[in-house]
Amino acid sequence: MKKLLFIVIISLLGIVVLGACTPDPQTALVGTWECRDDSQPHMYLCVLTFFSDGRFTDDDGDPGDWRVFGNTLTLDYDEYITYTFSLDFRGNNRVIITGDELTIMLHRR
Image 1 (cartoon, one colour):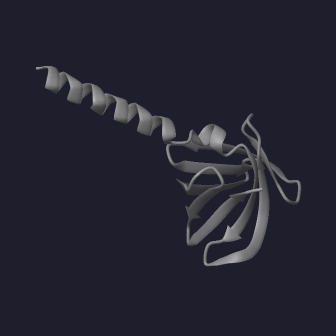
Image 2 (cartoon, rainbow, N blue to C red):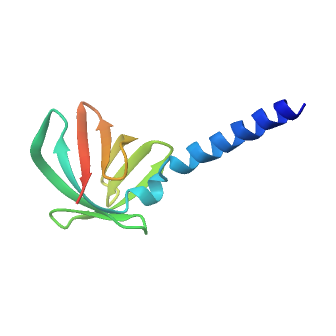
């Protein structure tokens, strides 16, 4: 019985530790990111700055709103243009976002 209880406790601790290592997308994206085309990693595309209040700006200074639901990032430019991306976190300094026929690497500045 003690052996079974020990296994259960170790399993629960493992789940807690793994959960703690997964970044929270709502806070992990806050900051300034440089965008690059995944097929041409050295090709500069844009700069996006995400703010904790759900707003963002691009390198032209155009503002918008951002939100994350699960692993989906949505960027709204004044509700007229909306982009939706799938998020794939690769540590604290690299995120891959994938949309319709477009894959972009975000690197923290």
